[in-house]
Each structure stands twice: as structure tokens, then as C-alpha cells.
Length: 424
Ligand code: ARG
Figure (tube, rainbow, N blue to C red):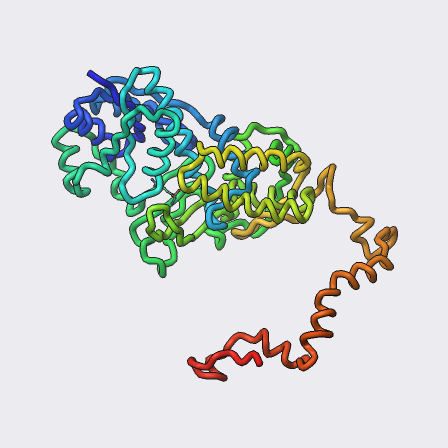
């Protein structure tokens, strides 16, 4: 019998999928669980896959590849989708796809299967990534294909002796890895409703967070974090530790109305303590070490990278090209940022870098000022020259009051709703 490699989480959907694929496609299922942080009891997941009918079950600890090839590059890129979401799930999908393809090749499988629905971004990320890495493999998405309601799915599970997890009682749909946790559904679908405390698992309510701040010093080398408070740590330990300390101060909660690739706006809650602290610290270090022009240009790259990652195009040529720029931009982004964590807020309060462009001798108002004050006069004359020229030739009939009126927003109270701004 031909084989299919299934991305297996141990949850109800992918468990039912094992049987469903057996029946509908007549394929043997090889279950692969990819560990990217907080996956739970991996032995139990493997057992369950085998008991449910998989012919083989593997788990892959891909955490270090995740950090090295996805998380830290996205941090260096400053990639935050819609300026809010650090992309934990979005970054994981292409790596999971890669691991699935590796297993498919090893097993000689003809297909890959995943448990995504037809409404989300994840199906796009999986399908596109698999197609990029192994265009010959068939893709099966049981949950997208079967027409079962939740109740029918549970009945199917019971009929096939598939254990139905008790966590099904949770009103939320969640996903997590070491870069963050996402929470959707239930009451959260009401965009007006404040998330109840039980939506959160990684972060303390800031109201109950310690009354004293914590400080943490994060050292970066070429844009990647290497130590905390002077202690050199590998990426996983560093991220775990930051998730703990920042989470305990209530840092990293995100409440976001997000534009999905499939055209839906969705209300997303995230908990990403380490990601928020590291992005904030990294951006702070770039302020010290990148020129104004580099920073302006990098904002374009950050936005583009975030969209590429979110939209499932990690393996695209454009992503590779932009990452080459990002990597080059990080040459001097080495130094230390001191972060204050307090009552849900993380803030940079100190920063230093060996190749810092922040030059106290130029910046100071005190002793040792080397800035050439006289040079300012000539600079300003040229800077303002176009305006002065325009004033002399075109603005002769304007009064200073006219300039104020030109910038005022239309006020409903003063003008009524139909009047147009008068710019005469
Ligand atoms: N909205 C986020 C994203 O698109 C989170 C998705 C969570 N995925 C999940 N299967 N629960 O990346």
C-alpha cells in the first residue's frame, strides 16, 4: 500500500484523520509530530497515533532549527505582522512542511497530509511550502475535505475507538510553540468582549504581576540574542527564560483584529512574552547601530518580510533575497539592551553598542560638545530654500492665519456634515 505522511498533533482532528485517510484514500499513514516547544507528552502522542491506526509514528525535535533558521532571522528582520503579531505559528509551518517532506522521502510516501481547516492561513502555508519543496507529492487535507460537523466527528471517533480528548471542553482553539501562543474562538469572536483570564496560559494578569519591576540585560551579536544578564545561553534556554520572566510580569499579551490571507478578519489573542521583549530590544539596538536611512529602508523590508511569512511564502525567492539584505544589515547590530519589565509593559531603559552611532560628543548639551553650531546656519538656509522661494513667488497673498486654517480638520460642530473645507 502507498504511504502518506501525516502531520500529527495528537488532537481529535488528526487522530480522526488517520482512520479517515485509511478509509477514503486507502493509504498507510505515517504519523509525524514536530516538537517546536510545548507540544506536551510526546510519548503519549506517539502511542496514540499507533493505537489509532498509524503504521509508524515519529517525533522530531526541531526546536533548534526553528530558532536558528526561522525565529532569529525573523527577529533580525523585525517581522511583525500588522505591527502586532510576531508570527509564531506562521514561522513554524514551513519548517514542519520541510520535516514532513524529509519523512515522505525516507518512507517513499506519495502524499503528505495535514489537519488544517479550509478557513485559515495554515492550510495555505503548508500547501505552498510542500509544493515548493516537493511539487510531486499529493496533498491531503482531511478536515478541509470531510463534511463532518464537530458532533459527527466525535461520533466517528467513538465508532472507531479513537479516544476523544477531554481538552475538547476548552472553549478556545489554540496553537503554540516557543515563539508564542495563539488563542481563538469562543467568546473571543466577540470583538467587543475583553478576553477572559482563562484565555491566557503563559502570562500573568498585569494587575497581579509583581509590584517591583524586573530588569534584564540582553546581549545581541549581529542581531541575534546570545546572553541574558551576562550569561551565555543557547537560543532555546534564552527564549524559555524570557517567556518565564516576562510572562510573570504580564508582558506579551496581544489583542489583535487580524487580516487573514483568505480574506477574513479575525480576532486573535496572542501571548508572546519572549518575542515581544526580544523584538523591542532588537529594534532598540538598531536605533543605536543603523543609520537613519538604513532604518527607514529596513521598515519596508520588515513589513514585506512579515507579509511573506504570514502569507506562506517563506520558501520564495523574494524571501531569500530580502533575508540577504537583512543579514547584511545586522553587521554592527551587536551590543546590549537593558529592558524593564513591569505590569505588562516592557521598555528599553538602557542600551550600548561597541559600534554605536550614538555619539555623546555630538549629542551633548554639556561639556565636550564637538558639534559645529555655525555650520547649522548654512545648512538651514539650503534646507529651507525651496519654501522661501515659494513664499516669495506664490504665497504673497497668504497670511499666517491662512496657514493655520489649511491644516485644520473639518469639524462637524462648526461646519455641519456637508460643508467642504475652505482652502481659499
Ligand atoms: N492567526 C494566526 C496565524 O495565522 C494563528 C493561527 C493559529 N493556528 C491554529 N491552527 N490554531 O498565524
